Each structure stands twice: as C-alpha cells, then as structure tokens.
Image 1 (cartoon, rainbow, N blue to C red):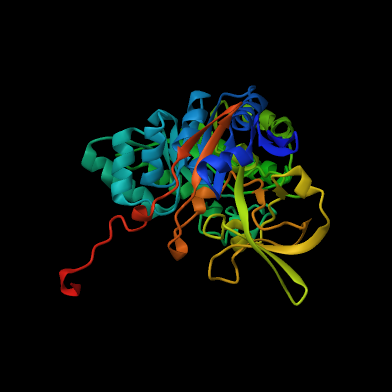
Image 2: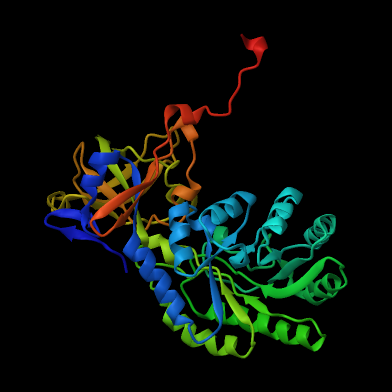
Length: 420
C-alpha cells in the first residue's frame, strides 16, 4: 500500500503532483510519502502487539535522518552496521538503548563509539569480534551487552546476493559452534550476554523460511537457558519482502499469526529489524527523458537518472515499475524500450525490454518502489552529484537532503605541492 496515484491527470505523492516538486528541485530526485512510511510502521507494530517487542529499523535501507526521526517518534529504534549509521541514528534522536549494532566488520573505533553511546547490544558475528569487544570494553571499564548472531542454515528463497542465513554466507556463527561460542562469551569478564540474533536474508516472500529459522533459534534459546545462560532479547532480524512487480509477500499480520505464538513462549523481548518493508514502496525516483533514440529497431529512453542513483537494476537485475507523471503520456501507444542513464557503462539501465508508453523528450517518469536501497546505495560514479531527497506530508513537501553541489564532489581532495 502506498500514497502515489494519478489525480487530475498528474501523478501525485499524497496531495502534491510530482511535476510540481520537479519544477522546484529539478530532476532526478527521490520522493518519499510521510503517510506511507507512518502507515507501514504502524501496521508492522500492531501486527506484533501480542508480544513485547522493539522495532529497530534497518538503517541501511534508507539512512536519511528525517526518516529515522519519523520512525523514532513512532517508538522505533535502529538496526545499524557502522559508526556512521550510529551517528545518524543518534542525530535523529533515537535513544541508544533502542539501537542494535550488527555487521561482520566492526572496527575497534566503532566498537568504542558504540560502547560510549550505550547501545542496547552488539550482534556478534565471530569469535575474534567477541574477543575484540571484550578487550575494548575492558579499556573503557564497562560491560558490553551482546547477542550472538547464529546462522540457522535456512534457505530464504531469495536472490543469492541478499541471502544471509546459509552456511556458505559470510554472516553469523555456525549452528554447530553456537553453544561453545556462548560458553566462551559467558566466561569473558567484560561481556554481558543479553540475547540471540538471526537474520536469514532480504526480500523474502514466503512465511516458511521465517518460521523454520525461528524454530531452530528458539530450540537453541531453550538449550542456553538450561545451561544458565540468560537470554532476554530474541532478535529475529528482518527481511520481509515487498511487491515490486508480481510478488505476493505475506502481510505482517500473516507473519505474526504464524510466529507470534512461538515468540510468546520465550518470555523474551522480541527485536525486529524491518527495512525494505517499511520504506520500499514509500519512495519513488523521479527522472526526466533527455533523449529518445532507435537503434536497429530497438527503442531507448535516455533519462537523467543512472545506475549511480539507483543501483538495484544493474546490481540485481531488479524490477521497478515505471510510470509517466502525465496521465496523457500514460495512454500513448505502447512500445518495448530500455530505460537507460547517462553513465558510461552498458550496465547502466533502470529497465530493459519494458513495455512503456512512447515517451518523448522532456517527459518525466516515476521509478517506483525505490524507497529502500535507492539513495542509500547511490554513488558519485562519473563525478555525478547525488540527488535531492524530498518528503511529502499531505499538501506540503520538504527537501530533506539537498542535491549535491559541484564543490561537494571535490570536498576533502588535495593536490600535493609537487604537482604545482
């Protein structure tokens, strides 16, 4: 569900035509719907109201501090994977006791930063990381709260690049080693075991992988409690998918009906790490047709957004719906075309062999379902400025990130004097 639709012949976000925003901020830009973001959070939150829980939004999906602030005001926390994401979450006003720190490659400086901030817990992914956290905590004279991320070896049935819970993935501690790792953690002077963590992947569209992974995880929780290892938090990660094209992912309510009874039995506080399901369909990338061309009968629409702005199609072959901002344009004759950007790579495309209206130079389009892993994965490749981000709330919109300037592109660069 989202708040994008045609009204009075123009494509709107909530009550504002996207073309009006384009007139003010230029193209390309990302546009997010406040109503959709709020609705998605509240739906997920209500689905699991029968169990004590905390929703820690996966910051990697969309790290704009205005969006983090919105989720924080709704009672949410943050799932982070870097010191930079920790800084963003704190600046957005998210209390440190609602922040969980995941990721396989935490540095000593990042661990120190998180301990000083007082995050809820680290999700630990290896023995060496555990020992490093213990050592840094000793230097600071504090105890580090941890959960161990256990790899349940469950196939999430998703794209291999976003599968994280199989034994061949880099994430987590193997199922076979889990008990021994917890015993080791229990013996460390500066470690406080507080939970267990699992996360099997992203864009999961079936309930069974969630249930199977949770079943294995809860069996381990029972073993740990039998050994006197107190587990107070069960972090079940995120990964619930969205509809990009014809997927039919379960509604959060359906997922809750299946797994909430399992979670109740733990007596623990449950931590969720949703990302895409909250923001994916709440955002669109708006871009303009620069040129149209036909090569050997093949149609190309060359637009001003490229793979540096939205990497998912090039990276994963992902589908994003494309809609003209003009209802009149949407009714034109349909053709098969590639929507391509200005980047000097053959992999620079937003859509391939897509049936679209016959667009013209100057027409604008919305690339849908771009709220997750859109701007957050963008880059300055080809020395292109990263785009503006806009948040719409009813009949008003605010620029929540300025378009980068030319000077932004060279900030921090220096020429040695011997090159003068």
